[in-house]
Length: 257
Image 1 (cartoon, rainbow, N blue to C red):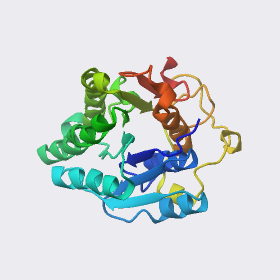
Image 2: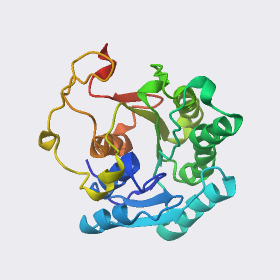
Image 3: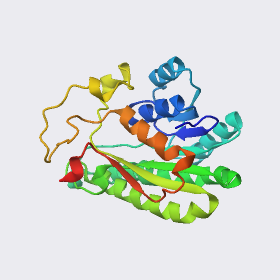
């Protein structure tokens, strides 16, 4: 698979899954504009530079439409096109249902659902002109399976899944596909930013998980950001045109049970 000549936007590219997606897209040949909110994405920049890629960081507040609009305007002004958009930026408070405050709820929904909706609205004009586009929304296996430890997060991810399907329906006539990636457990520890994210799965020590919930993985290990990046590259490829409105679950088999 190759994305040479393509331009992608990835929200939340400074760490974790977003960082893994950014590096995978770069290695596939795409030029990437990525968002950050507070801390500059120094580690992402370092790894992209080592890979010989092109990465353009843009400070963006996913709670603000003008900031989101500026993200795409800056990307287009720099590269002259936008082919791929990955909605990945999210907040997660890890609170149980009745521990959430009104402010918590509004903040999470504004970023995790409304931010995705706004980003789709703002990127679509660029894709419509080209009659081509790949939009990938990152959700979670908790869009289907309740976890208890973050009920509103799971609720928001369920909304992302339906947003994907509605957007796919609306944008199909313009050659734009919209799909969801639903990760299971992915290792995104704070220290992970200091380690390479492209290591081979065989290098990961097998975890002592049994093949049943909670926390079971038929793969024998938790996910890595690079695992998610590989799947996004597949979904972003021009040959993925026959897939839209779909949800790719990447959970090491945890949802088999």
